Length: 579
Image 1: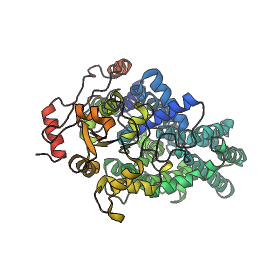
Image 2: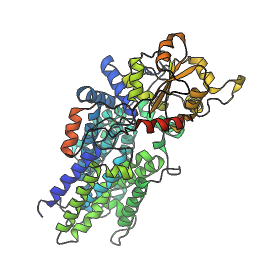
Image 3: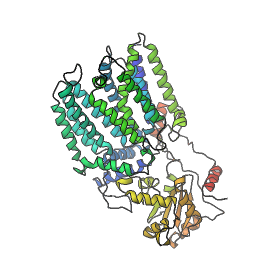
Image 4: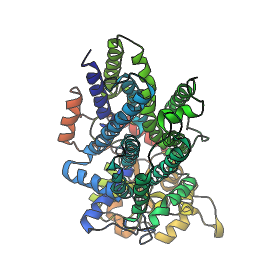
């Protein structure tokens, strides 16, 4: 029994690690690494657009440049497949702060609790890992998750010990402001606790066990300086107000599925449902007591500030599906401290820890065997490798091998990889979204995707307007429903462009000009013959394979791509509506 709690916690850590070991597929990652490389090579942070030909030279406030440099360094030294190392480090840091907060809350909530009692922490952490897996994808937001928990720990620790560690808020906020756009959460957290601490000191300190007995001057100084320190970045004091601009962008951005809110179709998935269940458990457990005043019970247990943070993060999660992990991380130490009462009520605790150990092992195996992903997150896959089915490797290679130059029209998803992989590539539109491109431009481009032949003013179509302005040399599009109408137009109706490359992911069209005559002669098609290629394999990263095998020896780096070229070709012909 003595070592079972530690064994169980180690297994939780292992589950956290394998939850981060995933194929790379997020298209944002590519332009972020490219930005990091640009910064390393040029020795400064770009403040204007350097990656597009449509908005080149326009202002670009890139908040996550620090994260992008770290990502580029990992790519340069180990390969992009090892990016999950950063995610692992962040998640382990989050678990560290969750455990610290759990010890604080559980000891306050449960008489007789000691730090060796970990059952509540273990179960709450496993549930958290189950829910947040969908956002463990090595994007810069992982730093905001970590820094949120670090700020909370520093503040709660200061409330308990009056420690000078509270002044670490200042460098932490400076780093955060240069790592990810959610740095505004740090400002919000400091502001919430600034107000709550003074309320607790002035109005609640006389209540038994409620409020704080010391004047929160030290915290106030650290918090105010930390907020002002946001100005220490390439864009100066404008970054203090920038979080409000980001909120405005979120309301305008209708082009990213992950930003859907509680009232939108597709929001209610298992992650959001479990989040609500966890919330109800916390609310029920906090308020069902006769020992303390109904209103004062949560304040006594967790502090006024933390209760407000829970409510604020719950609201944040309702405004955007991708924000659910913020609430889960903050709620986990609270839920764990509530579940700790189960351990206190049992004289023999061995069964509880055996249950948690078996649960962790089952969770571990379902992740490493991909069973968890097959059932709940089909887009994910265990292993340190690039997902070739989601990455336009073949199309990018074709562009490089045939030295396609000039202005292009590449869909906003595929362009991210070309920014990373094709030298001197300039995008038409890319995933930097409203940080660079106005929402009206996004709307116009999406209209081209969906209705390229709709007659507009002067009898011209949206596609004709765009092509007249930029005179595209080539077009590259994903073979998905969003871009199907434009693919169909270019294949069947356009007299200017010819299909020269296709695989299951992308189609490439080149303008019929004398300069492209040899290329068209070699790759062009007629209705009797469509050029089609097997999806290009991602290169193997030996170190990535070794690490993947360490945590799951049966793992194989062999391709899982479908090898039935005829079947894929048939699907592609149906997509382009060929007989």
